[in-house]
Image (cartoon, rainbow, N blue to C red; front, side, top):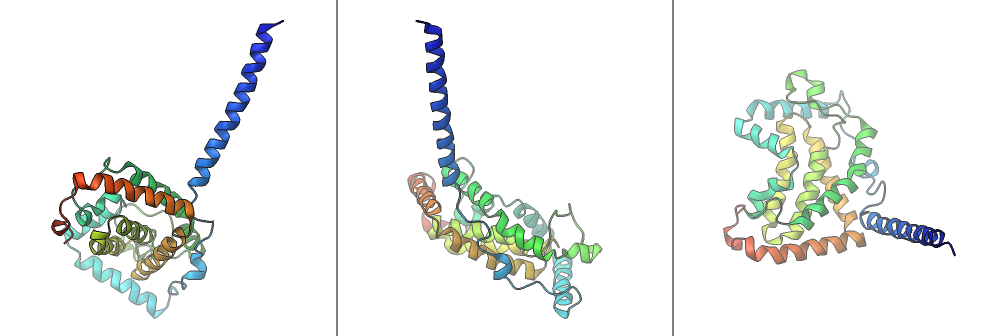
Length: 248
């Protein structure tokens, strides 16, 4: 009996079985990470088209950006640049000083997954309408690095709306302050002349639709429930009393 051949066959069989198990495991994780179906919500069908380039509405939109940029303060500019990072932890003033990296690992992973899932919902309507940004229409408004994609709808406004609506679910006692900060993320894009006000409003509408779509997904609801459990376990050790919150 050739033990080396038997051992080799056994190893190969084990390797194949292990490989199949690994593929199935990764397949399960990949499936669990899918929160939203392709092209849902359909931003092109949901949103009205942006103002036409030579329309009075476009002229008014541009004039608003010019006025906001002219009136902005150094503090507003600094805040807008910070908010442009779209870090979850920019919400700390609304939620509390305990809300910082490393305290809620499940929450951080959950929002990273959401970020990946919603990209197509934002980029498809952007690519469809190809609206120029304010600083492309009026070169005097240019500041910082140019953006890589189109203006309508605002991706920052969309993502800020999604972040705020979900964080308000997780920290309901801070809901109003969180939602207000989510609106600020969108408006800060006008302060930076990266978007028109109509881009920002469209992003808010799309963000709300995305969250409604997410809430129909069982994987999403399960993971959101897990995040809420994590927060409830950590919060008593970290949070201030609800009446003392920074966003009050």
